[in-house]
Length: 270
Ligand code: HPA
Image (cartoon, rainbow, N blue to C red; front, side, top):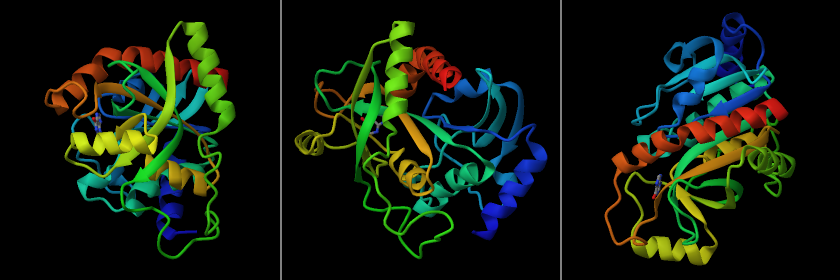
């Protein structure tokens, strides 16, 4: 296995109170869930070999470890995006470290634009599948067979049992959940209205600039995956007005609590 993975794992094993079984990756403006972790231990990415730091707004750039809803978790408070100039391999790296530490279930959140016109701003969407439109893939290059297979199956990348669990927890909490296909766009510009029309024709329900690389890396190394989008805006051209990053963060802040309670409930029920 990659030397840096082993080094990062051995440092984290020394610093973490216990080995995590659940990994969490938090999206733009959604980092607040990490503040709910009990007896948190913080490890900035910059203190770990092989890691690059996140520069995106609304992303803190550190691991937060501890207990959430009774389970040992390791949370990425701040994720890495392809548009920041990180390589796909850099984005995959923390996911592989989580797996090597003993994480079995990976839960990801993201902020996304609604492509499906029946969605509303503030909706939560469970990802059933994705379309990789980022023009790159974390699995290119030599394959490390000790991490996963050369040709990685993606049929059940979004673990069906976890999706079912998300719906049953949401029902108990009285939270409406959408489901759909997330299209990963490289960014950093928002899409054009023509692109959004094309993506709808391709079968996308939501569009965003993250999640796809992490889910590919997670599938490759055999993690169970649940991903939930917060629809922070309707995608370009739907509402005949400009999109803004501030609006994305504002809606994320407004709806963060509902998403946090849902994710906590899912972790409790795992
Ligand atoms: N497009 C891409 N990424 C996004 C959007 C969007 O409309 N909203 C939040 N993240």
